[in-house]
Length: 213
View 1 (cartoon, rainbow, N blue to C red):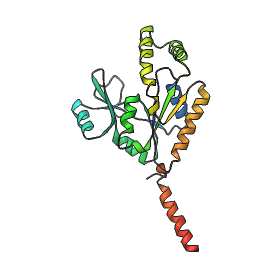
View 2 (view 1 turned 180 degrees about the vertical axis):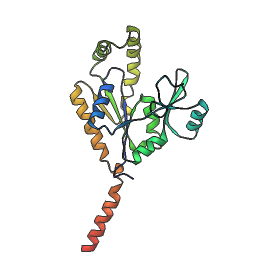
View 3 (view 1 turned 90 degrees about the horizontal axis):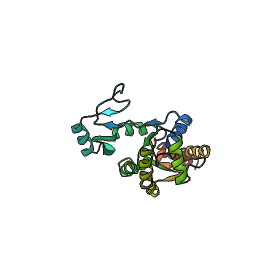
View 4 (view 1 turned 60 degrees about the vertical axis):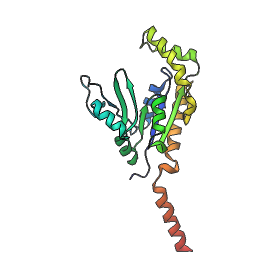
């Protein structure tokens, strides 16, 4: 086992709050942080690689994994199932590797109630204002006015769940928020629970103490 256990880092936010940019900043800071590879029952798209883009499963296999507790979280979206397999995440954190989840509050809640809850760090990103959230959605020029309106309607439902997260950051200054995010991750890595080698170290200290007593 690694000198430390990895973390399940959950980042959630309404669309336009800056989560994607903050995720890039976090992985630029530490490239060993990896994204969780989701499982899905939809067919692969051209160029997608099984195990790299998604774990492509049959619906029967997916439902069996859910029943067996092998999915940390799962959802049914537009006729297909999506979820986060527990096995690869368990192996990663046992090897001291952090795994990043870009999921909504429902997925975050499922992970917080999973067998790996003790190693979870959940962070919610808030916009400085609703007006600024709308401005960001418009100026990034990725969506139609209709899609932006739907995203804005959904945003309050997402924001209303901010209180269930370990940390909440208001992204009013990207550089400052990115630095706060790094600080939170670094500090959480030092939690006693994340450092299994501490037990042996304290035993050695005790042995040394007894030798000189």
